[in-house]
View (cartoon, rainbow, N blue to C red):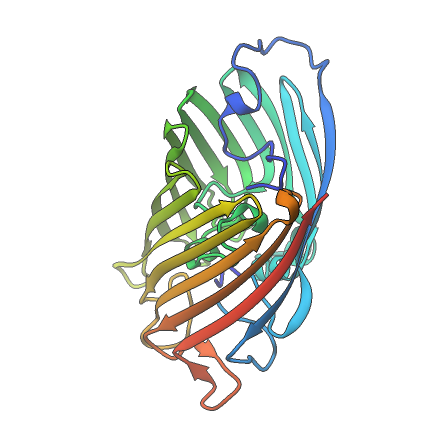
Length: 371
């Protein structure tokens, strides 16, 4: 979906979180792996969505979640096994769901042993080794270093994901270094096949980085980037983004991002696109959360969002959500959201003539459980 178009209740061992949260900085790398442990888990997110444009084929455009109209279905379900030790770590997570089908639909098929038929079932398959007390190397398929939102629905402030998240990678395939520079600063550096693809589609690799700076226990600033050649003509893509997340005000979480990308044109020059958004969530009680989001996304040359119109994509979205956690449980969450989207051109499919609209409205309800 993203090529067209982290964690469960237990934190992922492979998220770009400070290494000090995964292993003690005082551990010696020469310590034998006598404390290696294996844990297992699962997650199921079921949903129902009603799109007021009533797309004829029931597929909803410009999103991986909720991907189907007027249908009870599973958005994301996965099982996982995690390995944790003083010097080794790893995670294998196998997945299914409509968000998976949508997100991996653009996975390249080059040759007879590539493409989404197998790769879409792999959320993560990654192994890591601790080189020094502050440095880890991981290799395999892992969750993306880009952005402020996760592919795992319960980890986000809103149920539906922003356009900024939907049109940047959720997963990557390659190698990653995670460096805990100091207790406040974490650096992540990757060499990957490309912009969200497991199977290679050209002769080049891409590089990227992420810096997370915690200025206080409540506030973290992030910078992330990507540099690589994309598509069959191998046009250079340069992408940068900044984000912030804070809980400095008790009971309120705020998150924001600004992303900007450039890509060479086939005939010379460069196209650009940008997005920006703000999300807030109020938690008046342990069982109730209320969220809101506004964002904008401009891609006039259709580098990332292909609409087939002369105007490209220039759009705004807003949403309101209500989350209920029975008895304050972190294992079960009932989420409800209403979302509106507006564009400068008629780009949203609808059942009625003329077949496309400048606006789209959807309501969705979801029940998710972590095992």
